[in-house]
Image 1: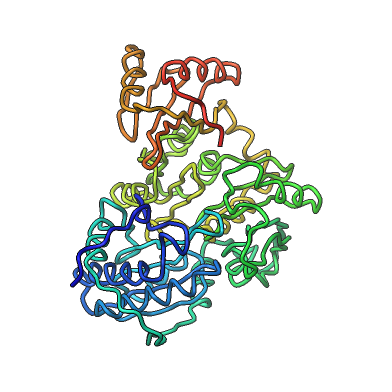
Image 2: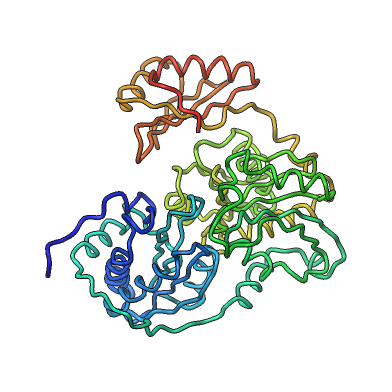
Length: 460
């Protein structure tokens, strides 16, 4: 054995992600396959590891070496092909796998790639739940170059996946009794494959397709729907074609953002609040991340449900879903989680849920969302700060009358307004989210908090 190697800037908090081919090379992919296979087979001996990939031009080369590493670790591999990330969450349950690995870099620019790793039941594997162990196992692995094509099992499971997602659609849309017209921006990502395979041919659904081409190795716009400028195509198409609503997906189609019939974007916390009552018909709970508007827990309570606050990140959201037994969850980033999907997030099911809620309410989306726009929000503002801990301490010390929650940074609630300040895991940044009754007060409070935090405001 050679000495253990290091993987600078490759292993992140929730997944593996880096620029290809350096530092994320084929040899690194092989080692990650070996490490992941060695880790996953400990708890699920004899069970297969399910793998898939996105549309990035280097994904075939990386998944090939990933598979070779997995085989070298002694696990059986099932390749489900070119799929969206939530497909893997479904497939690992459908196939009773030891885990699943998707080759993707989500919303990152085209030169990036990476791996999202899940355990049995689509349980997320992050730094605190196994990713560190996988890194250590990968670091001690010898890379064995080879030209042979890995001998793995290939399965086409799209029919089963389509049936699974259709469970979340109303019968009236499936049989054409009700009609919806929807603009969908696939962002040149995996929604360009998923949407036609899952939602085409439905009598009640007309799709206006935007940027569905995903084999050209480039993006018309960054595949990140949280950036307002990336929603411009969806907004324009909704207005031009008279759509009921629009949806913009990220690169691997596990996140999406809603646009109403007037072309206005809808914050994902408001989307969660809008959908929540439909998942609370028999009580239960809804999980939300701590940056969300107060209207979300207020709506859940008024609908007879129990709101459960979570740390930011899919690892924490999924854990809170299972721990609380909640039926639904939503994150400000555009991840939506479903108990009937093993508590995993799914852009496809979120799209189906949007359609179902539109049919149930039978009125324009802007009228559905309007009552939820009760408060004014700052959006996420970044500050470059050298000493993040000292800045947070100043904020707490200067808020003696406020309710303070020190989870995922600090949340300071003054009653009429509140803010959350979170440190970045990878950059010298503090991220501020603030909410108040009016936009004027938001501006005033942001200015006050900016002074307390110090540093330089970074707009990106």
